[in-house]
Every structure is written in structure tokens, then in C-alpha cells.
Length: 124
Picture 1 (cartoon, rainbow, N blue to C red):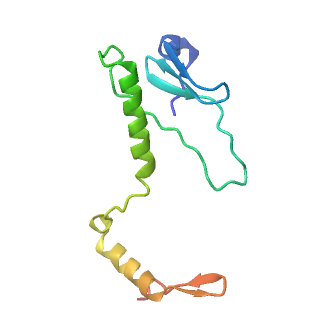
Picture 2: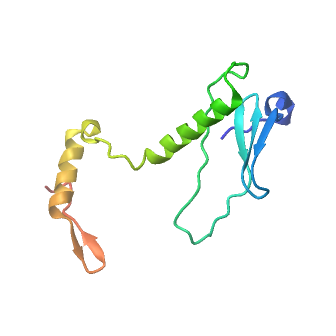
């Protein structure tokens, strides 16, 4: 998140607004890119949380239509959201010690009542 002071008002003044329903989210375009405004209703006991992440690397004076830019941002948001659900090959990122520890956990972990028990990583 970036906090911009009011002394830099030209970069935060809204140039264009796109909105839907009265109580739904609204987006506004500034010199820095698109900003999401609005209320996201949530239940404090809910296990689900909403996150907005928008990155616009396009130049403000680009000839690309605003709707095309918005579509690209929405596609990028979906890709960002599903990135945590893709099966990524993590073995290439792990050190030999990490791989050894994961194998120990896989081999020794067991459920005891409502708890889990595993072998001590530094003793194997």
C-alpha cells in the first residue's frame, strides 16, 4: 500500500470512474493507475477473506482503450488469485536439508487423539 500526501494531489485526483450497483465496489482512474473503492461485506467469523490487488504498468497516455486496460487488470487479478491453488513444482526450490526434513515428516507424522506427533527433525 502506498500512502500519498495531499501535497501530491495531481496524482490522486480521479480522472475517470467506473461503477456498478450502489453498494458495490467502484474503481477510479488516477495518474498512478486504478484504485478500488467500496465496501466488501464480511462476517467476522468467516474463514474467507477478500483481497484486492491491482497493478497497472501501462502509461497514462497510452493509446490502449481504458476498457482493455481494465480487462487486463481483471485477468491479472484472477491469475493472482489462482496462483495459490496451482500445483507448483516446489522440489526445485528446496535445499537438500529441506527435502530431508520433509521426508522425515512424511515418514513419522501420525495423529494421536486430536493432535499430531512427528519425529524430531534434528535427531534423524
